[in-house]
Amino acid sequence: MEYAVLPKSALGSFVDALRQYGKVIAPVAKSERHFAFEEVTDARDIALKYIPTILPPKKYFMPQYETLAEYDIREGQKLYPVVEVEHIVLFGVHTCDLAGIQCLDVVFSDRPKDLNYLVRRGYVTIIGLECNEYCDQYASCGLMGTFLPQGGYDLFFTDLGDYFFVHVGTQRGEDIVANFSLFQRAESRHFWDLQLLRAKKAEIFRPEVPVDRFLLPRMFQEGFEAKVWEDVGNRCLSCANCTNVCPTCYCFDVKDVMNLDLRTGKRIRVWDSCQNEPFAKIASGESFRAERSDRKRHRFNRKFSYPVKRYNRFFCTGCGRCSRVCMAKIDLKETIAQLARETGYLKV
Image (cartoon, rainbow, N blue to C red; front, side):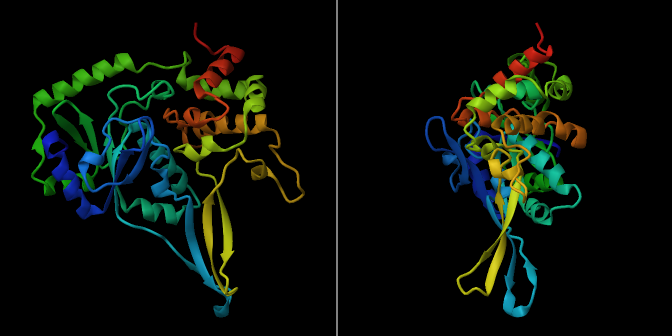
């Protein structure tokens, strides 16, 4: 059954049943405007309407601290690989974060393949949740075209009043639907309701910056020496908040940590950021991006230019997290608009 319907009255039973597939993780309200993905045991704790979480679900695919190997020098120069996994069901993932996970899938499937990520990825079941309206003023999903589902999920839920319209995206999703009697087969009236919602969304979600999305890579290439980079560089605090909350940033460092016995230890992977000054520093002490303006320009190009050339996709998903958490109030949409004005790509 490729399409199904789940009555909202059955959501609690569905969440309870999902626990047989693993730990259920869903968005939970931490305050009026702050949400986080956390384990839930009761559907009433799930925020069905939420602003993108403080940290994206990336943290379940690429943990902030991850053990890659363990060693014991008494056994010689040997490293024993470690893959830390657990069965997880991610419920309520917005389309912007689904796009972010797809970006990570592409990167870590590229050569050399990252087996730790790919093995963990197979243990995670993803259930998406559509945004019927804007989350807040920081989102740019209209510009990036990520307000509609484009795959990357096992099941995808759309809230249509007293029921969820469900799209089955994978065999795993099909098995879940088949195993639960809670689902009903989608009928023509359900498809009509979905069509009406999507038509309404087409009017709501428009490019937040008047530029052609498909010309963004060229704009960033031509604007490499634009004044906007000096402007944002002067404001930037190099706190790395923007990269920590980004759903597609994947830079990391690898460190060896010796235990107190000085015989055993482990090799760990930890998040790193191109916005930190030491990131591009080499052994001689020189840095390829010593200036904050260089680092800001690099980060924006890593979202709108470089990955388009390598992977044929943008690595900005329009979630707005970087703008929400920036202590210097650097807004992604304002930066793009300023660059577009300087390069002549702003539509009038």
